[in-house]
Image 1 (cartoon, rainbow, N blue to C red):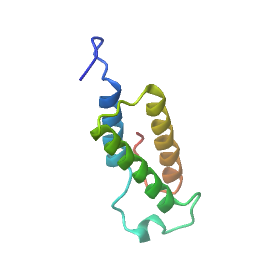
Image 2 (cartoon, rainbow, N blue to C red):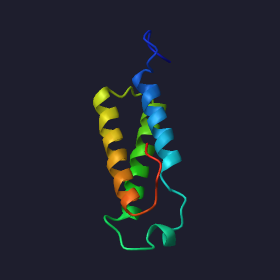
Image 3 (cartoon, rainbow, N blue to C red):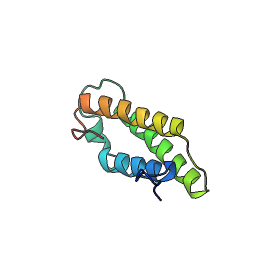
Image 4 (tube, rainbow, N blue to C red):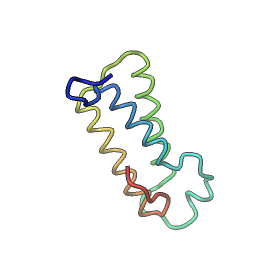
Length: 96
């Protein structure tokens, strides 16, 4: 659902953010690839944590919760920080 200005409502925006994160982060990569070289931050733990956050928001959205702009900002910032560490570790290259 979109507002009159054509922008998505916060539920739609959160679902899109979750979809984009799931498409960008290498959740299915083998552990040997994720932990192949030296790390700047533990990529495996970051992927587990961000995956849990995405799962939690999907459940909350399915239960009818409506996120506010602060929720979107927090999850977006978490995704950006996770992306930056994964990029430094050579696991992603396409920004979200």
